[in-house]
Length: 165
View (cartoon, rainbow, N blue to C red):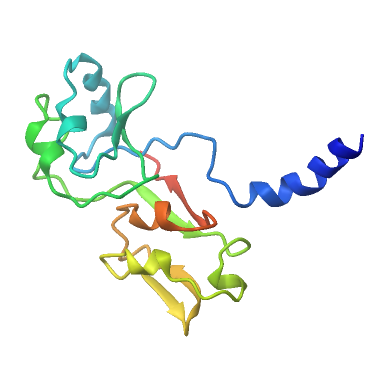
């Protein structure tokens, strides 16, 4: 009984410091119409997965590509679009990832008095700003959705959600 009570007391705290268990299927850039990703089921060798220099393009349960930001982010290298045989990804489409990033201030180290700038250090677009050395915020008007800030955050305070199609 004491063990169950102990787990109950700390489970809510521990849940603040883990990544979401819910898969977020953010699709690769260079696509204007997400419904086209259904064509990817027909693609046998999935060249976009192999071409990704950051190895963040993965396949979901339906064998459709999505971006996994756990270990890296998108450099917009264009390789996935160059090798797409069905024109689901096309270079003349805007380099933009349909993800909205935010910072959970309750678990963010910098929002809680600890000097940390992991998210800002990897932001190529300088979309993350600090008030002095604390309280980071993400300017979504600058953010490209590359995802580099997500995997480097020590307490997993950077969150993202998929933009609606």
